[in-house]
Structure formats: structure tokens, C-alpha cells
Length: 299
Ligand code: AMP
Image (cartoon, rainbow, N blue to C red; front, side, top):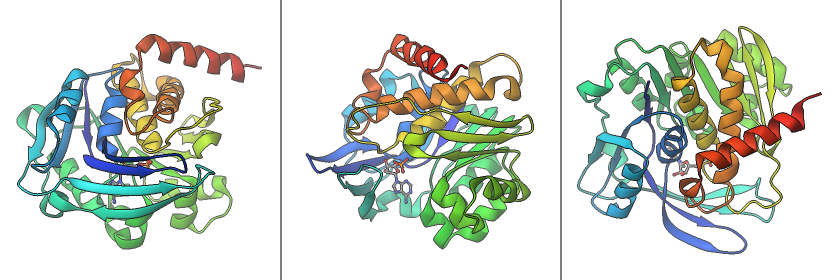
């Protein structure tokens, strides 16, 4: 089973206290698609401009990502720039240039419309709706978001929540959405908005799932050195959806393990700029870290 991924396909310029890396391959959909590709075939929906380097197209291809839904339009690729402090949990957006995303209308090729696993990675909620309108009978639809959409597109986001199976957001966004300081109280409120599966990301502290089968606390892989956490959240949800799409059995039977796989792919993402480390990762390295996490959390 393949995963349909829509989101931003971007050029990211990332500044850390130690170095600057301009125009890396980035975007929520790029990170999520590469992460999912370790486990299942991926169909990508996005848009790039005529400045998008062909080596990035080749990189998607090397991961077996179906690019029929990736549009190339005259103009500039979405460009995002961010700067990290010494404490990598603190990031500031320096620049967001929408470029070709400003006029983008995602269209699902016929071969994408039957996709059962749909990941609406971070992008304007109106575009997430538009993709969902074209999916025929999806089995499991999950969306991610960011603080920007809570600020400027809340009505569309609330409408989207009613159409989702799963919603993934970080703890500060959960607080922003529900005004609850307590994460478990926030989760209850989010369930009332629609999704049966709510996943709260807590950065290097892992994530929490609330589902019809109860709560699950998913660990983050303990890294002693983080190079660039950009895209870790997208890698987490991409890895999770990729794993779910190929696992046999029900969502409930597999989602905990799927989150652990997502968590491990996210750990590789943090060990290099942009997608540099993730794209060099071998499946055997992923399995090794999953086993380590299993040992670390068994009691
Ligand atoms: P994360 O580190 O999980 O917050 O994701 C970072 C990725 O989100 C980067 O690769 C950016 O290109 C992408 N991004 C940043 N701002 C936006 C936005 N407004 N819409 C969509 N994607 C964005």
C-alpha cells in the first residue's frame, strides 16, 4: 500500500551557531516522503519552480518516490529560512517566500486518487482540504500543521479536523489551539474537534498518542549531538505513515510500533543538515535503533 503525501516542497536555508547552509532540499512533504519511503511506496503532491535543482528531483527518484503529482511551474520554489540558537529547541523563522505556492492548486493524478493512506503534511489547510476532496475512499487520513495556520487560517483548520482520522501537532500548538496548559486536557479537547487519533510531538522528549485504545508514550531516540532538527516532525509522521501503510492488521494493532519507527527516522534527520543524513540512512540502521529503543523502554 502506498502513502499519498502533500505538503511543501521547498528550498531551506538553515543557520545554526556553527554554520550556514543555503538552499537545501526541504519542505514538510520532502521530509515526510523520504521518511515514508523506507517502508512503503510514496506518491508526492507538491509544486516547485524552475529554479529547483535537478539533483533534488533525482534524490526523490532514488527513494522511489512517484513524482507524477509534483508540478513544475514558472517562478521561484518555496523558500524558507530559519536560524537556531545554541539550544536547538529554539528556532526563529527569518524568511518565508511562497513563490509558486502562492498560486498552487494541487491536482491528484488518477493513479493517486485511490490512495488509502493520506498524509496532509504541513501546508495551508485550504490546500489540505483540496487534496482530500480528490481522494476517493481513503482508509486513514492524518494531518500535520504549524502555528502559522492556527494564527491565520483557524476556521479552515477546524473544518479540516472534522475530516481527519489523525491529527499531529506539537505541544505548544496544542496549547495554542485549546488554551489548555495540561497536555492531557488539551488532547481531550482536540478529540472533541474530530480526530480519533491525536498525536502530540514533544521534540526531544518524544510524543504522546491518544487513540481509541488509550494512551501511548513514544520515546525519542537519545541523541547526544543534534546538527539540524529541521523536518524532524515531518520525518516522524512520514515514517509512521509509511510503516502503517505496509503493516498487516488494524491501525490500532500497529500504530504504536509505527510511531517508534517514525521516531527513529526523525533521529537520523536531526543528525545532518536538511535531508543529508536521512537520505544516507540504511534500513538496517533503522532496525538497530528501534531495537535499542525497545530495550530502553521495557520494564
Ligand atoms: P519542522 O522542522 O518539522 O517544523 O519543519 C520544517 C519544514 O517546514 C522546513 O523544511 C520548511 O520548508 C517547512 N515550512 C516552513 N514554513 C512553512 C510553511 N509556512 N508552510 C509549509 N511548510 C513550511
